[in-house]
Structure formats: structure tokens, C-alpha cells
Length: 258
Image 1 (cartoon, rainbow, N blue to C red):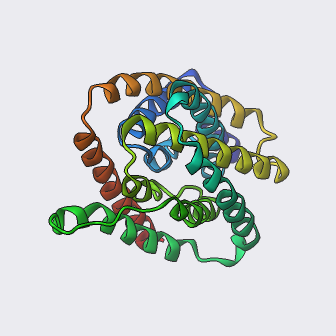
Image 2: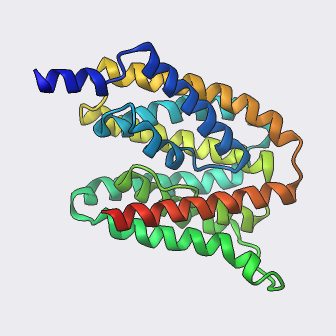
């Protein structure tokens, strides 16, 4: 009796739970548009309030795939195809290696390293403002995509790990959002295939929760596009670095909490 009651309260079977997921999707993907990513990191601790932990990765995968599809349509003219060509092989390599090593790696150690990297990426431009930072070439996107896909596969989300590379290459606002959306779509599609093979998409509750979250993401993307059009490139970079700071702190907190 206890287990059945617990199942009813944690599974998103009520309109209230679906409404909460819709609102969370709207908020997270609005932030994700304005700050170029990080929606999954914002959602993971909040979604755990209405979802069983084991459902969160496939539910986020469904919402992220739907969101990325819309973003590609919204920013299709801004996608940098030379970057996308280099991102694809990195994503494939990272997901394959991550899937093979998933059970052998200590996720908390990876989270700690990633958190420190994100904090450093956010703070260094302000701590050393007069330093002449080199412009990153297209070649950097191959290893960056591989590391991002690997960490996302192992930990469920890697945060805005590639943002420093995009900023270092000179991308901002629509060009950065559109190019990231296309690469994210590819990564989420490949991850959903792996979830399907593992049987994680067999539940109707996963699909209903994922679509509720995705509906909110669609609204957040539209509102975010309007907000983004009124931002300067400089303010956009500040928002991106603020998200790097928050994401890094969340990663370190999760790592230390075990």
C-alpha cells in the first residue's frame, strides 16, 4: 500500500504535476535562450520535485529535442554550418565513448572538474579584463563537442560547456543560439535512441511528462527570442557568463553532495 501511494504522488499523473512541468519548461528554456544554454541544469533539481529521479533524463531528452527543433526553425538563418560540420563527429565520438564507459566512471569527480572549469570560464574575463584573449579557430569545436557529448551522456547534463568556445570564436546572440540548437538537436536525438534501446521510453508517463515540459519549452523559446532581439551583444555575453557561474556552482555543489 505504501509503495503504491508513493508511486501515485511522485508520478506526474495529475493536472497539477503537468502544469508545474509546463511552467518549469517555460522558465528554464527562457533562461536557456537569453543565456545560451543551461536549461537542463536548471531543470534537474526542480523537476525532481514532481518526477521520480529515474524519469528525469528521458523526460529532459524529449523536451530538449522538441525545444531544439523549434529553435532550429526560429534561428535557421543564423546557423553556422562550418561549425556544425565539425561538431557532428565530436558528438558521435563523445556519445559512443560515454555509453561504453558509463558504468566505470565516477560522475561526481567529473562534475567537480566541470564545475571548476565553468567557474573559471565565467570569472577570468572579469579578473583579467586587459588580457588579450586569442580567437578560437573552428578546429576547437571538434574536441569541445566530443567532451560535451561524453559528459552529457555520463552525467545526464553537461551544462553550457561549449559556451566559452562559441564566445571565443566570436559568436553571439542569434548566431550562437541557432548553431547551438542544431548541435543540441543532433545530440538529443542520438541520446533518445540510446534511451529507447535501454527501454527508458516505454512508459506513457515518461512521454506525457516530456511533452508537458516540451510545451513549456516552446513558450519559453518564443518569449526568449523576443527578449534576445532587444539585447546588445555585450549584455548577452554578461548573461552567458552569469549562467556559466551559476552552472559551475551547481555542478560543484552536486559533486560535493555526492
